Length: 375
Image (cartoon, rainbow, N blue to C red; front, side):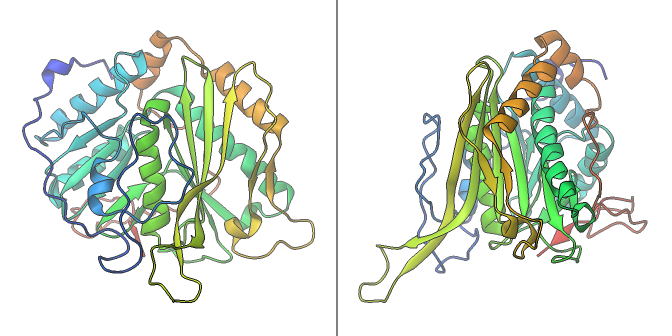
């Protein structure tokens, strides 16, 4: 697909719809609201934060992004392709696009375009707010970072003889509280979660370092909307200029709640928090390791010959070296990559959860589409 000028895209005309505070958990239940982190901060706070409302998911990390009005499939394709080209060529650092309002019929049109032309981009859709947030693939580095990490984890799983007991997906959409989302990669253990509506246990979200606040919001979405069924979210952000990759391991943690009613024995609260953060810089020796808990991934204790998935300092260095060796192309090559249909060139998932149906699904029209998964 050839590059398309930004002038061909109609300017934004529709503001964000009002965002009622209706996120997980419902109002009046659970923890108090914590305001979004400052976009000026290079790293979010290591302190746990409370579940957020819908306004947080609609706005966090999207400062300066004006929603576009959906005016048909061709205009949508032009808008996405133009911004993706500018992102990969370094003309912009904005990785997200927003369209509003987008109703169910329009979403069906976008869905078909997404599955045939823009497989590398990932969607987050809000039903009541009729808002679509698109995370654009920022070139080969992002694709390689998430895929190569997944290959290394799959290798560890294979060595334990568990390769047939877990599935990795790259295009499945999961439905939360009034919204639905795709991940870059996710893993679901078949033996403990055998049903299609089940959530994955491990999710990867990746993007450029300037999008880190938004990636953190994505991590919160998985942990909060799944009601804790997603156990680990690995946020991978990178700076191509600095040749740096940041790994953040997000999980739900339970800590004492000093804001609870006095006198209540042992008040606690559960909230997302970073349990591990590692910066990998090209040419700088790495001394940190990353551990993914076996029970969190497979939802059972490890048996003989099984154990936690440990990425040693040397393994993480090899991961970083490979990303920059094969992904550190010049901007011209990056731009050509972004003008392609963006297939997963590195590897294909060994097991997919996507299901094609001839009758269509839940108001998406009559064309075959990927089945949605709900809690």
